[in-house]
Length: 265
Image (cartoon, rainbow, N blue to C red; front, side, top):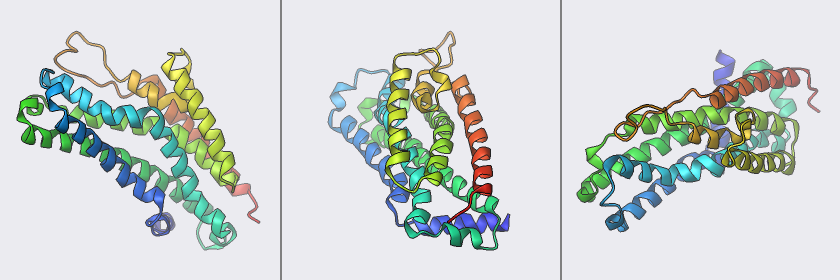
């Protein structure tokens, strides 16, 4: 455990000044401010909306951007960035020669990538809730305070987080095996476009394709009940989420055995 914690801390120090780290903070803030500006400057267009639909439309500004194309691409970028530090400095041999188990190094790198995605999505949720409540003060005519959607927003972003883990595990392994930028990013980009098309066209087997999971998670998030107009209920553990978790576990374990037997030149 000590080796894992040291490796995790090392990953933070190596990436704390990089674009991958700051994107986890800047992206949620920028898109949250964009949604806030739209509703603040165009408030007259939203006055007639019911509080529930007002929250839904406000949240969808961020969700529509993040949950379709941006989340898969950000996940691919994070997976590459965490391993590119060693590729660029050619320090894999040095890293694995340290008195730390390969499990500690490999597990810490993967968990650090997971933590960056979790941080990004957690900030998306918090900024959505925060800016929505700020609008209820600055623009009381919008009646944001007449409905509380904090729980549902947190559930939605938690589901998006779970749906991204399959993509992360695959891309993490690809970026570990290939030092160049184009191969893992190119494969990830093509797979993401394919996944978006599959999910948007409601392909019945899109739940089995990890790169379709973020969009599929959004389309399957509503729990069907007899009172949807008054109370929005989020179904977190749909089959696309279970597949994402299964893929993440299998690929993560397979990646460890590849690293264990790999000769670092």
